[in-house]
Length: 121
Ligand SMILES: [Zn+2]
Image (cartoon, rainbow, N blue to C red):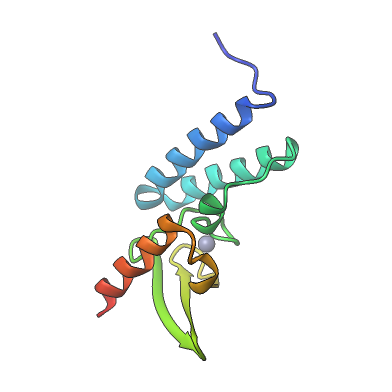
């Protein structure tokens, strides 16, 4: 029954693990980190690039899934002319800043900060 994971199957496996990690992050951040680490390890092993969306949603330090105002504190700062989203992981306290302008061509990502601005204001 068990399928060997190799080559393109790794993508599916990563997607699958990502879904679990996402579901777990509110219930059990520790498990979310665990699956996050699995994703990174599989990607490394198979020399795969993790999708930027997945990477952005993952804490750099503990690798649990970051969800704005749920598993991470989010604030938006304006620096000179560009806006920066500051994420603080609720699980390990790691901080990261993501400039919004960089991702201006990215629909999925643009949708998010707008939703965040609404929550904060
Ligand atoms: Zn973290």
